[in-house]
Length: 342
Ligand code: KG4
Ligand code: ZN
Image (cartoon, rainbow, N blue to C red; front, side):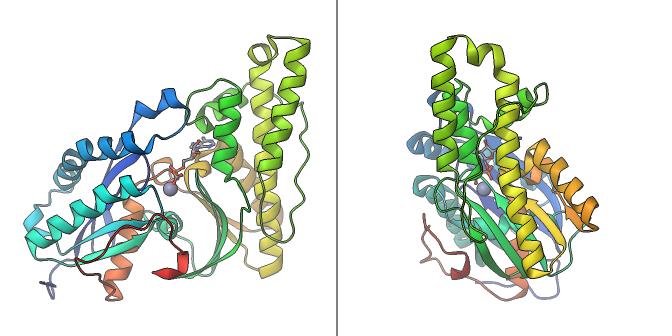
């Protein structure tokens, strides 16, 4: 293996944990390219189909990596190291990115750096300015996770609270399924909600401390829709905007109430959001208002760094490169992975 000394540190990062294939180039800590190939094949199934995701990653990975190198005007022989998402995620999806990273690193004789997907979502805040200072709190909300993370340094973070059942993204997506919307429903609900009012109320689940729960909310939405549809079978079609606004308002209030509690408990007043659900307009506006009312600072990533992307993997990989944290060719993907384990 060949760690180049003195030269520029050029890292190729690869993300393939779910249904987006992404590659990015980071040079001396600065993101130079970030290519993402989405997989529309899952829309009709109401969720990600693991086998189809894996096959689509195989089709996408070579062109995506090639475009990321071209965008950054980097030749693969100039690479210093390769960072990749090791987990958590869908095993069949992870295998494609991990195998690709291992093969390319082996052929180029350069080191490999494993990255934790959730750790990387938090570090998306360092893909561009303004960057938070340590310590800060990050509400990481995606299709598979909902966490409040205290971030003391790039590679030093701890989960203060997390969901005990469904993730916030799942709450959006499962509600969407009940409403007959395509997957992923989060962005569609967000769009409809912009023309609606939150006139229907759903009770806030009672969960101790900084943990979250969304499964009760899902059931109460289902019962509400069943009751209204019995009275009027056009209820969903005729009230889609208000239903979406109401569901979204409740999910956002659950998230921001817990984040507020975390800020008060820890005294940390730099608040960030990350993950796919941080693209939600109501969550973004809600965080801005919350911080303005309390004199706190907010950090909201650009849209391209909210949902899965390799730029965030690149930020983490660069920090791990500086810390000398490499892995060997024996590394395998991990579908379940503790945040602290790497
Ligand atoms: O982080 P991400 O791209 O993938 C995972 O690691 O899960 O997050 C995907 C999730 C999906 O549940 C999707 O519905 C949700 O993020 N999402 C949104 C919005 N955009 C994406 N949810 C609410 N509003 C949005 N605008
Ligand atoms: Zn993610």
